[in-house]
Picture 1 (tube, rainbow, N blue to C red):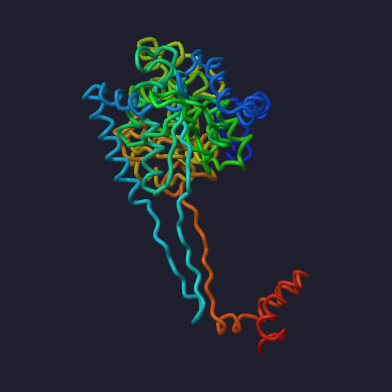
Picture 2 (picture 1 turned 90 degrees about the horizontal axis):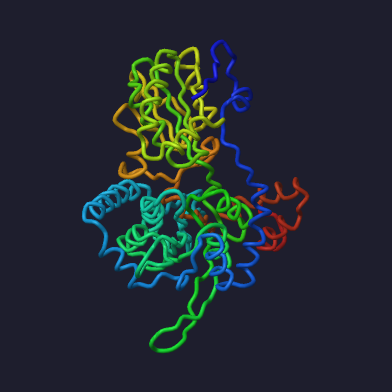
Length: 452
């Protein structure tokens, strides 16, 4: 990786935001390209979805909704060791996410006056699972588990149809993704990918399906919210349709930053940088260190490891990209300033007394402490969620959680005496804002007089 030497520089936030590497992602231009796709789905429904699947994924699904028999066959055909791994990932995710559930709280503001905050789940959610350069059954787990624990009433999953599939699975999403859905008892799954999947969730559709009993009309009801990562076209569709649907985030290419000192093992640092570069040629791998010796040792380890990994071409492109760098800093305090400004999706801390250093970090999607907590653990089986903010959004946003699927609703319950007690203050504030009718809505309850 190329180097960015920040030693001897004043590291204020303004400077760092301009200097630190970041993948270029022109979502605004992509929005205009996906607009006609989303409009086609809005106006032509199932016909448009089937045509778009054939156009972009190279296969026309037999039906947009995956039949229950296909989901069950995928689960029945799952290799025992893979099923065991998914079951353990689900178990751990449920443990962590169960502790995120909120309880209603009632505050007694004054005698006779209460405000209750009720936590109400979103009614219906669409969960998107990518199907491009890799297969992501883990994304099924990460999206479904918190939604289920939030007690979302209705869940639907969409994932692109795969032209490589054969037999019963021809034209449907990857069987491993289907098996993960079945394992989590999600039976509403659609063979739809890309921007058109987000549009399907926003607008819904109906299609005619042939069966032994004749022709029936089935479809996908619109959802209230869409979550899940995807490529730039998925991100653009989320931006275009936000407002019609709620979204979790505009997720960009994946990122890892590693804050390390001279005590770090260069082989582990290199392995972890490669692990994220494996996702995508635009993936960002950033090493922040005050040790030039560690930087040199890491470069040597990368030179050995990159050619030996399966997706070496993709990894090499990502590591050579402008989004990936080794950043040299004067000391650990400077390193913390850099990683806080960068606000990585995934941050590893591989330093002396790593837990203490990690506790000082303010901005990251998830923090991985020490040499035995690599990002890969969080991707699959730590129990944490791997749907995390990218592109520096960790300065203001969180990863996916049970809370993502809940809405806080304030319930205000005041009796006459409690309202009388505060009436003069409400009227005074209404007059100060030149909204006299607000005050009149109070005094109307007391014979058009301000209570003494």
